[in-house]
Length: 268
Image (tube, rainbow, N blue to C red; front, top):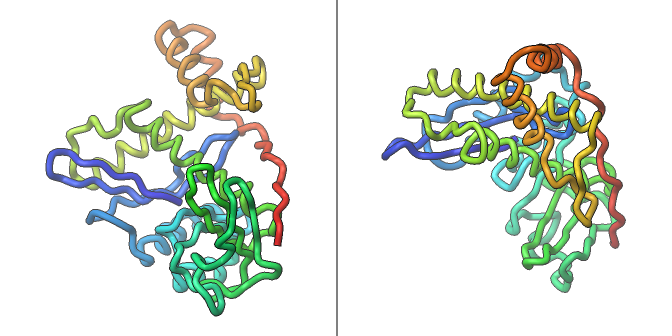
């Protein structure tokens, strides 16, 4: 879950999004046009989750991943009540039992990962708390009801939705170039672009299986799956023929299984 925002003139446009990882890319599934700037409310998040639960029951959710905006006891309690596991980055001023999160492991070094020995009481429930320090010195504090060794590797998947927003906006489909401001029209346009994003991701997944992309020194693909799909699909749409219909058929086929990275060890 995340939120994307931009301005058209003096008009703020603010979309709350809940998506799923499909074939290594995050595809928005439900969204809500917020009538205000800034953070979403707990009620708006709960309603968005409820909309997705109507078509995708909680037993099919692996985990809900979100950043520091999406925290709070009422919110976390609602997820537990729906039996949705959570992996949330929490704020420095979050109370973890008897102390603030910012007071935990104050001697942490960049790249080091530490965790509390046992689950602790956070936002009305028992969760693991894992803390790391980025090379830039930013403390990342994540609370989750997942197994402790899976917490950070799972939270890193959140960056997929940032990539999705980039693909939908300035680095791809130029959503913010629209002059629309009416919420209903923005919602329909966003949905259409999400279909295009899913199509690019599916074509990219197929292309990656047939011809794996070149990797950098850290073993990461130089070209993203969505970018590969865009390159193939744009040529197929331009020239038509069998290439286009082959891409079109992929819309009706499932994404290949997603392979996640190995868990990282932590110290207590």
